[in-house]
Picture 1 (cartoon, one colour):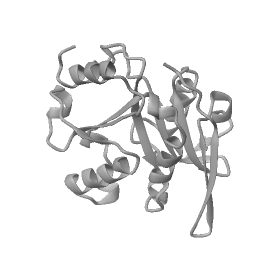
Picture 2 (cartoon, one colour):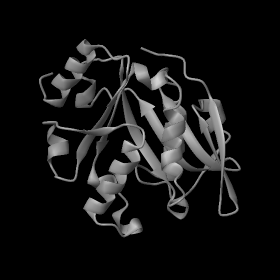
Picture 3 (cartoon, one colour):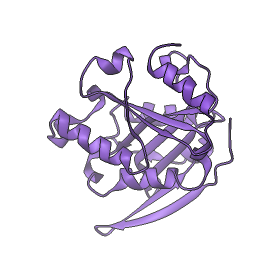
Length: 207
């Protein structure tokens, strides 16, 4: 299921700096950007930008970036679950994963993550999808933020809550491998009961 998602652009002015948040951006747009060297939670920055350029070619993918003069300092990515992952087993067309969200460390504390999510969820597009994200503590910048695991988890919960994602139970082994890990979900207004049941089966490893 692919609904039309309108391009959105917003400027933020914080501490004498102008940030631009825009999306969804396509591959050609991403090729015009550079990327901050502190965006390295998932892979080396240049490799992350290459990955985003590839992901943007997928028909269902939605990528939003925050940048300063074409230099990316934050991003959020939505796409179908990886075919190698458990969450893809039901083949749900109305299931999207919030696969990554990251803000470069010098720019944290400016509400950029929240604003990227708010722009992403503006309009009716995600009302036709179940959106989920998996929280794994090993992806968190505990050293850079000097937060404990639980304080970081609480921060992530607040960010996700800002656009309606809430914790749901699951038996998925990787999530259950540590108590700080978690599954957060938002069910769109136009999701049929059949899709909710399918997702429940995924949550409880019945697929």
